[in-house]
Length: 357
Image 1 (spheres, rainbow, N blue to C red):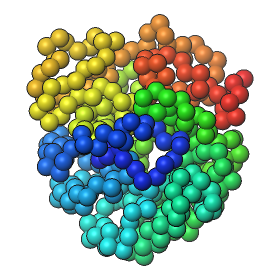
Image 2: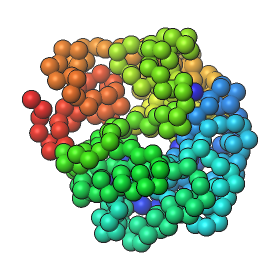
Image 3: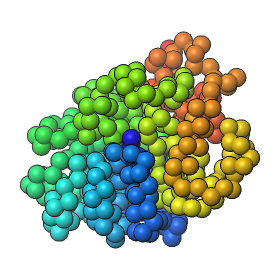
Image 4: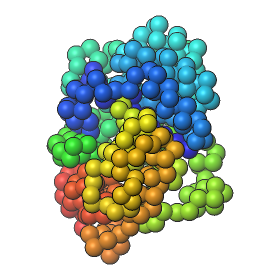
């Protein structure tokens, strides 16, 4: 139903709290080419995928970005483009107007120039982003904004929200930083303080929900109703985000994984060997390792994998007194120690770093 397609890990911003490691950004030669990306879009359409998010890194660093968007539109996908906005000029804005994506979702770290550029690490980035927003707004392209709460922008939240409201744009606040995909906890060093959410209409945590962003009625209903109407069986206590049921993510290298924050299992899609690099789980049969596989087979394996991950001796949430206040999720556990069930110390801390009572 929903897929986040990472087109590149490269980015022109240098945000220190980014969850993508620098080493990933240097492997751009492994990125899918245009034809390979088209092949994945073909397979997604055949499997019935409807909501498609193009993300990165920064998607507009790809020279073929408009070819990809145009092809996806012809395939009938509902499309959101997640971008920092700094590379969108008049020409790109006109082309986006013609292609009419469902939404351009721009990350706004601040309104004030000095704070904005301190976070992005790029001089002149603030003016470029707000100029792009102005161009897109004048062309009546649907806009959305997201803010990651970090040190320095806590008191910018209300300004960003008010700015979003003036433009009639949707707005999300992400008040939970994640470890990097390689397990580094460095992003936690830049975590904001509790004051940051005082003026926030809502906090989304780390999950992206393409369905809600596009106001799709079927995805606005409760999870139980969704599963009943779609004939899908719930996958147990651990995953509450529909991973392995109706959503997944694909890396810039054509690997199917659970979500943006879980760099696993890495099933190759384009008629290449399926990669299974974790001996920790036994849900795969030996025959599945090394088989040729397309997206359909990889998706089937991912569903089986998720369904087979159950609470084990490491799982403590069901008997924890602060469970309903905790920010734990399997993605955090995986980033912490490559286990989907373990407790994560950072999850039960508030944004000051103090343990919740």
